[in-house]
Image (cartoon, rainbow, N blue to C red; front, side, top):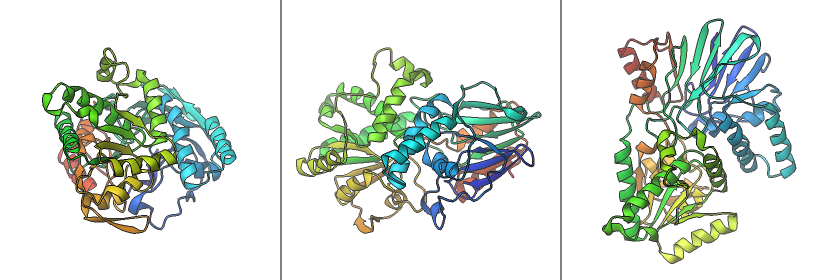
Length: 442
């Protein structure tokens, strides 16, 4: 077997890997969109490789940089099965429906036709079991701990095993099971998003978030958290519920219930319902919480914002009322979606806080807000007077120590490793650390 990369080899987004089982047969692992600088001068709608002999597509998880080009793949003539875990099978149609509505067409008939076709392709496969595919191919999906349903992909053929990490989650996420290292890999395709740094611990990240929330109470400002609709939003709700419960007991912040938490993303609300429905895939900690809190993703001061008119009215209300609020809205990199309207309105306000809890790709507005004192949104310049925070401990991606632990956790060391899904510096640092430990990075 050998692998050809159609995305994420020299950048962070657009993950798409073609695993050749033989000279004429292959499987795809992900087919994602390019974002930020990676998308420059690319025709996203064009599939630039032949689909002859492509037997199927394996989806690691539902973030758009891993699945966003599936509609174009199908339009180009792909007619094979799409293998994924049961949670991903439920989440994928929702994610692609929203992507098509925002970026392609709002024609309901066309969208329904695509979704009907998509569902015919989807083949849910249980976690942690070897599944027999055509042509002697064995496939196993193991928990990756990144978002609900995310999987490490293991493909074996005639005794040779290729492993694709997909996006690995960091350890001790509050809702998901930790990633599990495979026993072995002849060839490992490993993500490297945070290959050059380590996150703060969970206790410290919760303290950081709590401190910012208390500042929001004190200055009656608006805290904006750009977050992906699936994964970050649900874990933030879980953590905020715990923070509110603890702070309520402390006399110093007894006004905590005075701050509203606004989830302004209909898609995130739908994903949260699926998270809640699929509690069997939660980790042990979250299941333990269910013994005394049957709704850990819901709390008294949580407000779900619905249609566009309610979204506009909410922004005007926050402007006029001068009351503290926490807003969680997509997109996570501020490249579109409702979060942009909040940023336009409040970035110039010194009482505003912007909290980034995920990776911001080069060329995205989120990266500019992180790194500079102004940003261009919808063609207009906005000066940044808000307080900007990066809480790396909330990242859905494994850090350097997690990535090294994943490799070192294999009973047999991988014969070769290829690093993908990372900026040049992140890949270079991780490569050096792996080679220092005796691994071959190719």
